[in-house]
Image (cartoon, rainbow, N blue to C red):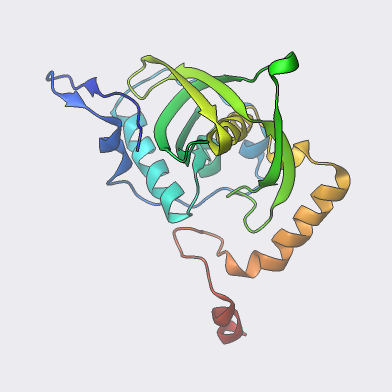
Length: 214
């Protein structure tokens, strides 16, 4: 497990990012089609206790939904923030919270694309292949306002790109061909009965529970 470095409390004691990964409240995940999901976010300017409480809630929500990343837009807030807990190409679990991220990927001969299935917690149940760069560098600020740089490989690279897209008002479906997007919609529609409106506050249903509801 590899996280971001700790930073001091006002009283001088060090506070680690791990402290923001517990104790939060699970929130409903905002779905595609909600305006906040398709609009560019505003920068984070206040690095205060309210921000760090939100980060706790976002970690709790991401874990309840079994995700590897979650943007603030996915809990209905139009601010430039995401959290992640995701393996890299070496299977190391990396985690942290990033405000005001800017992601860059290699260009020219150094650019290698990896095409694998991608999904989104805000459009649950659907997966389609999407090519993304296998390496990415994310520059931003941590929950205390300090500058940070995250180098991502493998799935972490995809996560950094996916979450930053959210903060720019883009969902991964916007990057798909019309045919792939239709397939994605069909997959999501077929499984919509498993995801309550306030998911993951209310847990995902099983196929058996659908029969019981009927």
